[in-house]
Image (cartoon, rainbow, N blue to C red):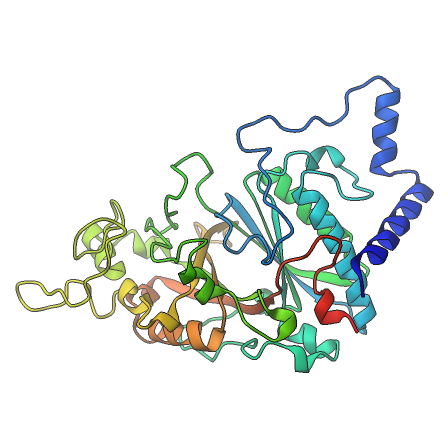
Length: 404
């Protein structure tokens, strides 16, 4: 299967359909020009014109520096969907994502003027376990893709359940992001339905120097020990080797973790630092140094007790072997509170690994069994996805998986 004919038919189909209803973005632009009115003008702001390349060996949005806003959109295939239906969906999404991330409107875009500022927009595709099962692709499913083991700390809610598909859409501008999600979900309605949207954020770009570790809503730096983009450490931790169609992809574990800020804020400053194992001021380990100083897990105080508690979050989350390294990305959420509550806040925790069972599960078991932060945090959503490799120019997402 080649990409060019498939994408040509996508363009033809959308152009004909849009012409029939008289509402294509191109038609609107021509009408505007004919009336002597200015059309959309590309952004000249500091950040709005920044583009992240869509094509490459790996999908953008994984080791890309975090954008200010990231939405995770979970979707299910419609009942009775076939492999051919999945190819049609990938044809639509590939074309939409390529255009939007480049700062161009999608075909038949009803709000083309909202697409001219890419603002580092990325669109990342994920496949859930049932995607393979429903399309008869069980033998091509990555071995580590599946639900996490039962964990005593979990209080999982059905509304944040596992889905067949995931779109992870990130941008520095919320209007750009909202428009992209609208286009992608609208154009998929014949083939998939939206189950949930989880909206996350980190500090706005420009509010701190690039490369600054973001803070979560507990006030703590989050992601200090991540492997650096472009390094061998990151490649070994994140990019998968097989099966053949999946080489260059990765696995994503997405956890929605609710925070009890009311009780957390009643803790003293020293109590909060003790629970995490780092200082609030700059994220340095309690054993001294700066944020990037390695943990000294053997250090003891004058009474012989560990300076970093045996149950401190950083001790249990720390990779005990190189095999446990992973790329951790945290995005805060702040949703409308329920009746009688002050807030509904927490963390959308995204972990990217080459193998879920080998890398993520051992660390998560330690945290579930003993992390002091479990008193103030509760996982309410959990899902896992295979993130396919990147897209070559002229080809489609998942072409090697869905093709003959």
